[in-house]
Length: 167
Image 1 (cartoon, rainbow, N blue to C red):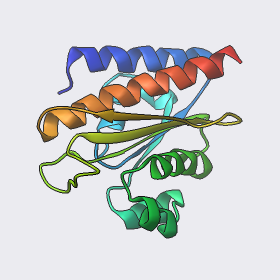
Image 2: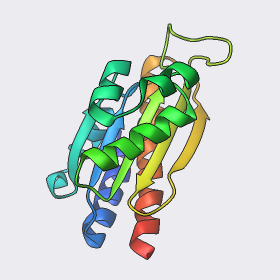
Image 3: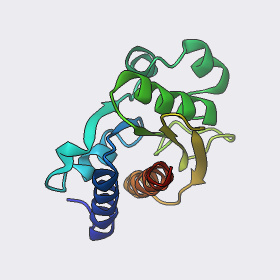
């Protein structure tokens, strides 16, 4: 179902977390659960992946992750601030050490001049540390954008897990 490259990234992340006794959660919008899905393609992932939040609507971001409606209204659901709030909300709402959030515009609709198709904001959070953010502009159609966002989320989670493991 997932490309070999993504499965290898998932296995590396899961092994790192397992070795460091870390658990994780995902908070996904435009990827619709694909990050969690990719992780669960690896046997034994349940000892690391605690839960995945699929928060496609603004209401879900508010109800499940505690993202404020005012923040979504002021910055938009596809923004650095909302990605950070999603990741931090996943940490607050799940008994985990690290979390990743993904929000973006996969297309083909929903874009504006300021927020084009392919724009994705990701955030990686861990207990006791500053939340990391990355902004990407991925080319391609809806599927390509979503798969690229999954790869970026796995990379960000691996970076966050590695810094947690070092401390």
